[in-house]
Amino acid sequence: MERKWWHDKVVYQIYPKSFYDANNDGIGDIPGIIEKLDYLKDLGVDILWLTPCFRSPMKDNGYDVADYREINPMFGTNEDMDRLMKEAKKRGMGIMLDIVANHTSDQHAWFQQALQGKDNPYRDYYIFRDEPKPAIDSVFGGSAWEYEPHSKQYYLHEFAVGQPDLNTANPKVREEMIDIINYWLDKGAVGFRFDVIHLLGKEVDRGIFGYGPRLHEYVRQMADASFGRRDAVTVGEAWGDIQNAVDFTLPSRHELNMVFQFEVTTLSWSQGPMGKFAYHQPDMDAFKSIFAKYQDGLNDRGWNSLFLENHDSGRSVDVFGSTAYRYESATALATALYLQKGTPFIYQGQEIGLTNSPMALEDYDDVEIFGQYKALVEGGVCSKEAFLEGVYKNGRDNARIPLPWNASINGGFNAGATPWLKPHRDYATLNVEAEQGKSRSVLTFYKKLLKLRKGEFKNTFVYGDFALIYSEVKDFFAYQRNGEDGLVYVMVNLSKEAKHIELLAPVKRVLLQNQETDFQGKTSLDFGPYEAVVFTL
Ligand code: GLC
Ligand code: CA
Image 1 (cartoon, rainbow, N blue to C red):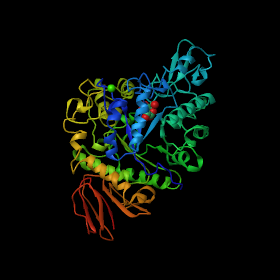
Image 2: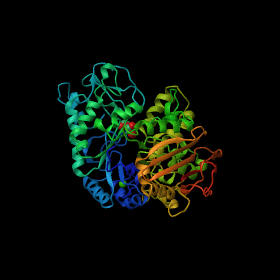
Image 3: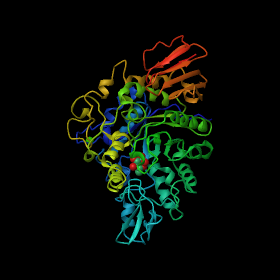
Image 4: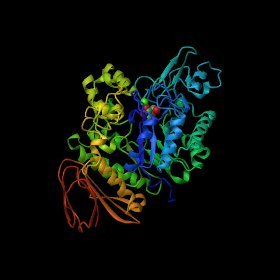
């Protein structure tokens, strides 16, 4: 496989609204990110992915874009973004932006034009129909069709009412997106994350929403005219299966470098009508076999993204680990995840083992939580209590709570102005500063882990083959990585129960571990709850 500049890089996802509020107005901002660049450099990450920070009425926190070329004034100015790119570059880091090509805000000039009437040239940028058909629900609850009284037609919004779907079958729409991507490439963006990219080929009248017949043609066209010729790094949010992931990332197809696939993260969702709002204890054997499937499936036919958290998920300690074993499970999950083959994506706060922080219903802000409350609780599917239990695990605002930096007011997110979302309930003890400089902390472990990935065994971790081992041991994730720099073993207990493993040869060198157990020279290994070790034989 041809080697690429980004293969050995680590991505850190920033949710600007919740990262750091430099001007103390309650909302995180770009100057705040600039202030924290040294922290990120020290952590060992290379690329910063910012969720959308363009002008937006923020109905869906920026995934409703009103102007793709203008930075949202609540986050700063276009000059601030220039400065962020420059300051990041100085430190050897790059900025990755988030492009929403499936829909815009209803405040976008294109949609405002489209509302002028059926003859307006922008009308066909969107999807208007005389009838709300085919009947389909929006992701956030309720019908995905909104009546527009002026023209007596309905427009499609697969997400919020304020997020009308673009008609990507219209070549002009694709040209607009290409221009936008090139605009940000010229400004210095090193890559892009593409929101719900699998929806771009929809053929509504045939009832096709995801993976329409022309999807790959569109993505390829965008790649050829923008990011593909500029060697940018790309990742598409693509809800689908392994074949979909191959179709997007097979290098010879010249589409995307990676996708986010959700087979693992949705293990905590119920299959019933409550979906993510009924927490389902993840089967950790399914967890490891799904990862193994992608490792194998994309080995020579694409590239994996390695993630467990993002701005749409609960915290992985709550979802896949155990809050009673916060340090152990956060570090165990990191070891299991980030030493696989692929590009690590760390979501802000994950590096300190941040947990969920339950709140009263009215303290939430998320359009999905309120939309699904209406559909599920008011719609009689479940009780308010049951719904809130689901929110406390899988609700999106868990990840959007202002990042606690220290024990001062609002967790040091700012200088005391009321944050847009309540601070974390445990910020007095669970914050960046409390994790810093300790020999045993999640943050210290993350730094060691990233150093290990980039150190003596780098080529093994970046390009080596992956093979699952001891797969019959329940809730135990073990694999070997075999590459240019040697053979490395990774063993992780993903449960609270003790595990015992017999090796064929003694442990030669321990490269990383999250407990103090002496594994050196041993062939009989005993693992405590969420214990993890990386070694050579
Ligand atoms: C993606 C984003 C999510 C957003 C949705 C609509 O799933 O990650 O935050 O609400 O797309 O843009
Ligand atoms: Ca601010």
